Each structure stands twice: as C-alpha cells, then as structure tokens.
Length: 116
Image: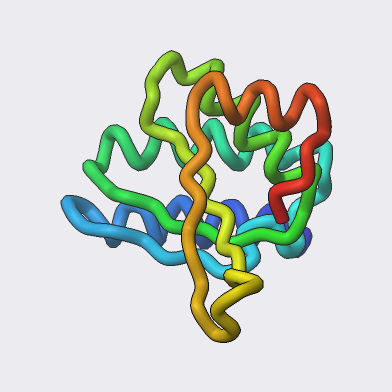
C-alpha cells in the first residue's frame, strides 16, 4: 500500500477507536493526493456519524478546504464547519476563531475567498 492508502486506513481506524468521543488530526491532507481528498472527507463524515465522533482537523491546503466543502454539502447535514484562526491586529498575541459553515463555506470556496 502507498502512503496515501496507509493514511486513509489510519484515519478510519482512529475514527473507530474514538467511538463516542473526539478525534484530533493535524494536517489531515498530508500524504493524500488532492484528487482523493473528497473521498477522505466523505469517509470522515460517514465514519464520524456512525461512531458518534467529533473530528477536529487542521490544514493549510486550499484543495483540502474545497474537498471538505464538497463532502459537507454531499452529506446533507450541517455538521461540517471551518474555523479560521486570526490574530487580532490591535491586540498582538490575541487569537480569535471565525466560524464558517453551510452557505458561507460554499460561497467562500466558490469565490476563492482566502480563509487560511
């Protein structure tokens, strides 16, 4: 198996092991080809729902954000949300989270509005 397949399998197993809890994944797209990232997110949405797992994942990849939005829309739920962390200009060291979900996420990806 290649690195991408190992990564997908690892995330799937981590979802199962996190039943009724939460899963933290840093740089979730690492090792996954951009063309397979929608499949990754579909797996996560389905697995998280089945196992009752709340997933927190980080990325810097625009492709991964687009794949997330696509899978969130296809899942037919409002479960997916993106949180963009920003440092306040007037208060150095103070970070705020901007929550983006549903229709906002669709607009951001369609219009390629920078959120990273």
